[in-house]
Amino acid sequence: MANNRLIAILPGDGIGPEVTEQAVRVIECINATHDTGFEIKTEPVGGAAYDIHGTPLPDCTLDLAKSADAILLGAVGGPKWEAIQRQHRPERALLGLRSALELFSNLRPAVLFPELAAASTLKPEVVSGLDIMIVRELTGGIYFGGPRGIEGETGSRKGFNTLVYTEPEIERIAHSAFKIAMQRNKRLCSVDKANVLEVSELWREVVSAIGQSYPEVELSHMYVDNACMQLVRAPKQFDVIVTTNMFGDIVSDAASMLTGSIGMLPSASLNSQGKGMYEPVHGSAPDIAGQGIANPLATILSVAMMLRSTFEESDLAAKIESAVRSALADGLRTADIVSEGETAVSTQAMGDAVIERIG
Image (tube, rainbow, N blue to C red; front, side, top):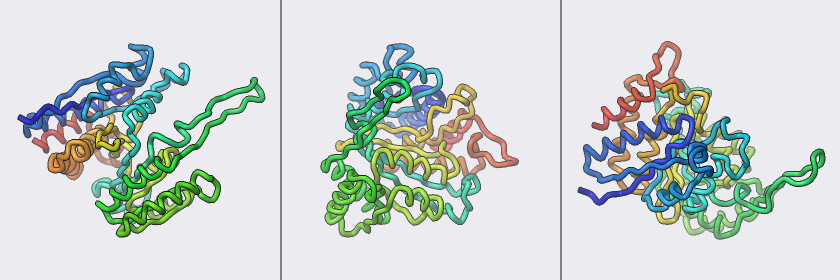
């Protein structure tokens, strides 16, 4: 038997527990059929952790995340916790995990499965064959910069945040993006706002300098507003996109909707040692939580990314991806991707279908 490899499961809030349950079943199926020796441990995170421990990222959860080889996270947040103090809100757990584990490189693929071309709001000829990788810097920028806060008296208060990037931070994410581009079609577009922001001027300068070490990669630059427009107008012009934390947050969500449903898209957040936290791009969707209708495929595909990036099990990753494609080809659809005249299947039924095809 292979040596145990620890996966931390952090189900979180909303539909997080429902979709991670199906992903865990996939891991257990892989263990049973391929003798992979994965060990699974679970701890709460986000609002669920706050309800138990009074903090969204308790020590037990952070300790497990640090000791694990990889982390699978469901989703955090919901209206139940919106009124609590900012430092205790569920989303702070994500920032804490990213910072503590130095998960600086966020990979968000936007891939259109052929069976779902009709589910996109864009014309099939515009999105057919879409395959983009967005590389988002995840531990710097305005989300982490200081000083920050709200000050002053009611009626004249001001809110402020600080956007900061250092050369080493930019160099690190640039190398990550160029290496990914080398494995794909060798085209990289760096997205910034260099016509307005000094930080973006530095970003463009440093990315260009790093590009000289990757002469085979065609490097281009694009302002973020134009990039969003081009994603809607002609998305297949992009191969790999690299950008800052905030711009990546926006651009990746825009790209996700090109594929027909945000419920189909996985993500990976990696550190320099290849350790990663894997999670679906979608949020906690509290409006459908507990109804058994959430789409588990993004979380299952996150397991595939985990197998490929952290555990170097590319064959098993491809096996999961093939099982997902097969289920879609056979007409199985959850509520978010069902077309008129089709019958939606439950979260559990979609998990069953994938596991059947893996086995």
